[in-house]
Amino acid sequence: MNRQTAQVKALDSGITAGNDLGDLAPRPRSIADTGLSVNFLSGLVAKHFYSGGVLTIHELSERMALAGPVLEELIALLRSEACVEIRSAIDGGGLRYALTDKGRALALDALAKSGYIGRAPVPIEDYTRVTRAQSVHDHVITRPEMEAMFSDVVLKENLLDQLGPALHSGRPIFLYGPPGAGKTYVAKLLARLLCDEILLPYAIAQGDQVIQFFDPVYHHRVSERDNPARVMLDEGYDTRYLQCKRPIVITGGELTLDMLEMAYDPSTRQYQAPLQLKANNGLYMIDDLGRQRADVTDLLNRWIVPMEESQDYLSLGSGEHFSIPFDVVLIFSTNMDPLELADEAFLRRIGYKIKFDYLNADEFDAIWSQVCAQRGIEVEVSVLQYVKDELYGKYKTPMLPCHPRDLIGLSLDQVCYQGRDKLITIEDMQSTWKSYFVRLKHDSET
Image (cartoon, rainbow, N blue to C red; front, side, top):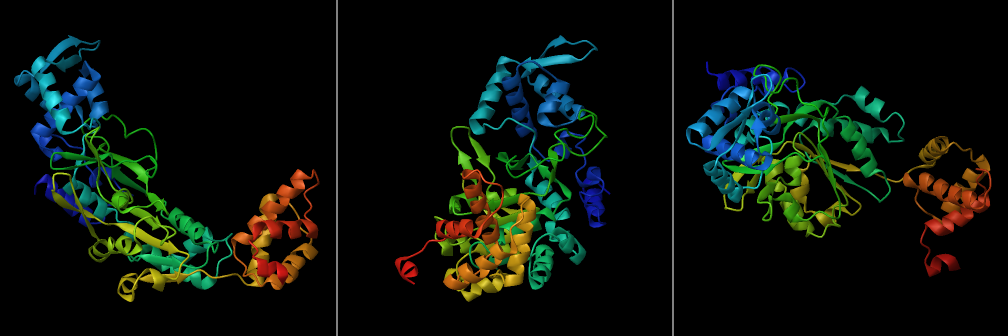
């Protein structure tokens, strides 16, 4: 049995990122084990020498995240081609290497093709294998976990029982309802249930093209330090991967279609992974659907193939197309009528359509009490009763989960401005109500 077959069998037997990371992503022992071509690695080594000057094997290992024996093999090849030379020895017997004139020419040629200088990338085939082995949809969410996460949240019970199965179902989720109903807040709490650790690559290689994958905005490392003794061959996992929390990507009205495709920067000659690729093995939420600058039909159509095939298709500037796993909890959230945004054929592809609605009086009271406790204040019962009967009742305004927080917050602003103790009065609430809600002419006449 060869090494690659052994890896696949190990994964099939249930090894995930939560178990032995060395089995999930074993460290390369040779150039062949990296899955990258000799020419590509030689060019990357040359770029590191061109950038760093004189380097030891240890320093090069820190830069490229490859074990010493792999780099020794590469340097031996570059020395045989007169691209690298020994400059001096360091204390302890190690050697320091640098480029020759021929090596600098090699580095410049490699930089002309790609400006990437960083950790050795992971071949796309290896990334696909690791992504599938640690699928977010294998992370089963139970009712006790949901109850614990939402213990301090006023939420209708039927929502809890819809959201839980939806999270690990593998199906997209469509949240809809009025603005301020708590859709985004609840989605962020759902994301916190995906709290286990996984491996994410620093960069991915499609052929000889490098795609920058790791993004500190969305990818949060468990530790800033890699596994021990990177230059050692048999310890830890492949440090071309980083141990991270599952990614959470949320985009709103700023989303455009080009953000979902490969981005190429001609000044640096580097590719950047699109948002849904960065969200792989995690959660991707498209908030405020229908308010993007892109046409909503085009935006929704972009997801049809990934949703049906669990596979996305991307292309490089050269025209080369390739497939990538689509392993995300995909959430759409909107304040608009879903039937005005998408036709029934598209909505049928979404497994869970979950409506967030207005509050009843008891739910409003519960959230009001929570906000008061969080702000460290007490509001007289008569003030709350006035708000519900005279303000909500008079203006027939539906109650939303965001209202208690906003009304109390704005009232405290007035109390602070006037230099009074934190005691909110009916007069404060009357003034806050006028500031908070937009009132049209016919409202004032009424």
